[in-house]
Length: 154
Length: 154
DNA sequence: CGAATAGGGTTGCATTATGAAACCAACTTT
DNA sequence: AAAGTTGGTTTCATAATGCAACCCTATTCG
Image 1: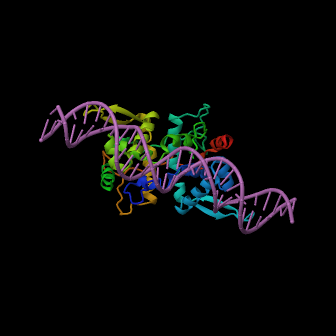
Image 2: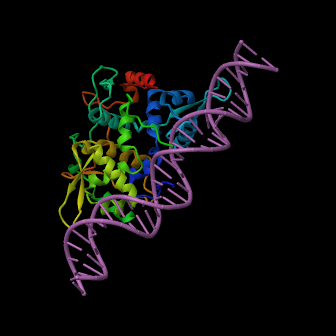
Image 3: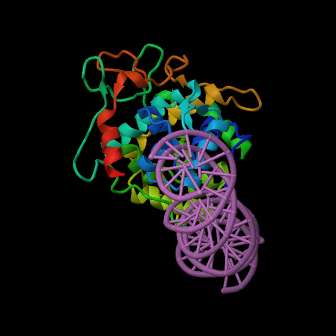
């Protein structure tokens, strides 16, 4: 059964999920952020079926999250690199990782936090902030108009 | 074919996606953040099939992202409310929304930004920051050990 | 009191999504 | 020429999804 797509949705989150909501997509983006570029490396690191990886890479390229670059060596060799659009998923992926770290620690107890390369210090939790930089919770943010849009869109 | 699950994965993002990576799950969480609580409201707002909604709500409750509360009125009436774990997905959802707003504007041109309730000012883009509050990019964050873990886990 | 409504499910079925594994085409190296 | 490299493509079986009907309990209404 074809999943519902949210192309015409007024909800940004829904439209975002159209592009990165397929199983594996965000993990591919994550590995691209780690520096992975080649098909075989994505495949081996992720343990993903080749046909699925092919499909996802193709879609991420179509959606301009990644671009496919000829790498010249050895015949049909390509690299997949993040676009700016793709790189802008960094806060999403980090926030998701921090959520996972906090609420679902690794089964083997290893907890490898993210650190600032320059200082070696752990980075801050990703938070939602207002224009003055003060952290905001769900209740502090006005989302009424978006809810209205979602209701109207049905 | 059963999707690969990442229960034993050393990758936090993968484990997080186990819980919120199913089609519809994040949108349900989003609507819970808007204040939606009742089954029929989720269903109507999202336009989701009842069996799928039921399945997703059940899983989100099992994973303690939501809790199911008896609301007392009119027979078997329940409400689904965010737990603290669920509320901690706020930065994820906001970051995703902002990504969507930036790179996939609404088809009808409406762009409803998120605002600070108290001031009415637009909120900041969600960013990754170091301990001094300075914004970090992908390259500024050390993720080598996580990549190693992902490689080892295979 | 029986019918209708409210509420949240459950079931059956058809189509798509996913994964495993084999196969493929073009290019390069031995 | 055979083998290796690279990134696909294809086949098949099982799971995931959506539609729509059905279900059960509780409450309300005529």
